[in-house]
Amino acid sequence: MNLAGFTSPRIRQLYESFSQWLLMRNGPHKAALNINDHYRFFAQLDALWGGVPTYDQLLKTFGASGLRQAENPMRWLQEIRAVTVSAEKRDEHTEQRRVSEMLSELPDFWSNQLLHGYHAELALRIERSETDLRSVRIALRAAVNFLKLAGLVPQALPRMKALEAFWRRSPGQVAAVTGFVGYLNKTYSAELQARPEKRWLEKAKWDKAERELVALLKNDSGEAPESTWIVKGLAYFHDIRRVSRKALVYRPESFNGMAGFSVEHEGKVLWIPSASTYTRDPVALRITPEQHPPGRRR
Image (cartoon, rainbow, N blue to C red):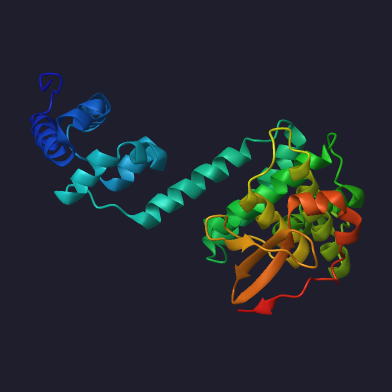
């Protein structure tokens, strides 16, 4: 055990105790696998503070991802009550990092100027407790995606055609981009429509669901997993989105002579055609937003 590399007696003592804890917890072989990474973590504590700083200081220096990599040392420091971890501060730091990354994501000065102006307005709303960092991050992601699609030349403002293209491509971000559209209208008199009509948006969602379904059939890497097909099928055939593949409960079942799957969802059993069934006759199975296939209660 290399204790001579530490200048602080406190860190030397902590590292020795941690090594014994790790040995007892994981056994000699597993403990030896990552001991060099653990040593580097304690060496940084030694070089920067000569002891164990506050959780805020650790977050600022290592970031949430860095502390996750130091999972065992952090768990042990919590056990001996040398550090008090705050999940709220960790999540806040993660959100702030994501926001900072987005603010440097756009390549051109003019789009950046529009984005940073919008961010400044959102920051004021945080100060007034009118929103939170997570909502700001979601709003900025939609704004960044829209500006990338718009491809603005200097001093030009997005046109309605670009906004409709964004709505069509990302119907799930319509609500999130509304704030940025309002900012452009208020600050630059952009005269953009705030939101699409309900029927237009429904069609955009269905069109996207169909594109994603067809894309699975064109996947060059081979046939898509059943669970992936079913998740996309729930969106297209039943307008059910944000379903976890891991939570799916389904079984093969034919309907009117067509192969497919029965899927349990919120007390109903819904039917989805298999990929091979859809491939043979996509026109017959094509539906519109008004034609949800019925589900039955379990």
